[in-house]
Image 1 (cartoon, rainbow, N blue to C red):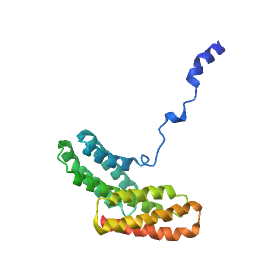
Image 2: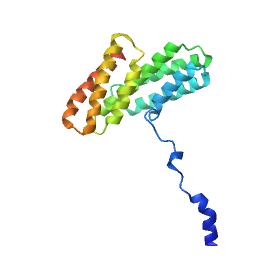
Image 3: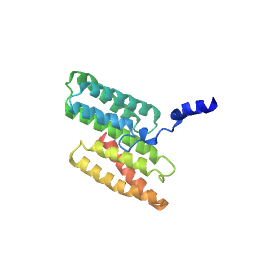
Image 4: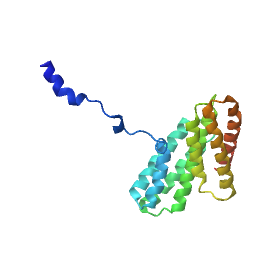
Length: 195
């Protein structure tokens, strides 16, 4: 009987392949940023239902982020959430203008990336934080994309330099950290000025 039970249970006890699980990637790890991108993409495709849902999810996520942070971006996260909320009624009727949505999403990205970058800078060391730093700098880079003019140009230049410096932290060089912190501080000052 024991052998029969084991034989019957055999197929059920086979290990589930790891590939069957959804592995996080750099573009999908941050669900809040993904929802912001989804709102823009759905609006572009004329999908009102998905646009509204993505705006609701993103605004809620920003509110939760604001509640859980003590950074100087707290009020900016709340403002970003409110900005998205005001677009929901317009999105439901299909009257939201693309440039309004893109601007609101960009502001939300700047607040989100700025807050997380400030949190990282508040830690004792940036070593071992290369992935998180890169992810949030890229989030700020896309957020600045809508601005145009000198601020966008200056911001993109600062972020590009910071990304290059951050990659050097992979070597574990503690001497490089002060310079990286200074560059990241300059990026945050610019973002605060924009918001």
